[in-house]
Length: 221
Image 1: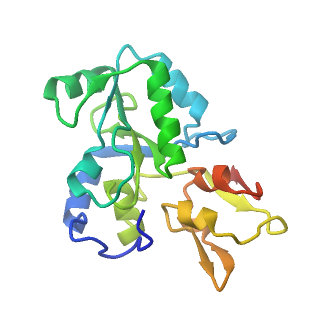
Image 2: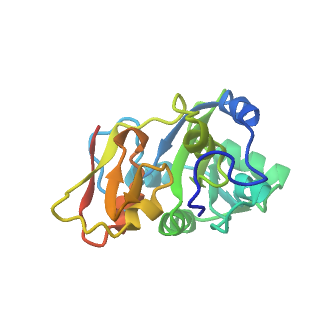
């Protein structure tokens, strides 16, 4: 993951025009906290909800992340892009980015693997589709949604969250682990002190699961 999360960071970054064209085809994108308790949320899919979606699917396909294949700006895991049913069938027919049919257990394992690697699990609903698919695991280095958000403030109409992280300052040791994990640039260390911007937080849970002193939790915004 690059520490330089804003502006033009790589020679192969998405352009603003490219990003805006992509966003016109996305109805919504929601973050999926993994291994983090979430209650009462309408816009965040927690892991149990995603597990139920995958259980109800007739076909699950995993393939390499198209954004990381195309942009190649980081070394995060690639084989973590999941599609279901009709979208999965299309992926197999097109054959791009090594699609293959997988079991429920393997698909859930991919999501957990991506979370451990510091990727944001996100469920997309595309224009003209009546159900969620794909379930992507995204980075701000390569992903069009996260790249546009942290670099230009774009895609906030696409990505929304009713949850944010909250830090118990009495427990926080200012170690910076959460800042390293945050793909949204909501957390950073300044002069050895944690600085948090709640407006940039989208409740993905990466900071919660990584905090060594359990000082962070997800709460209603």
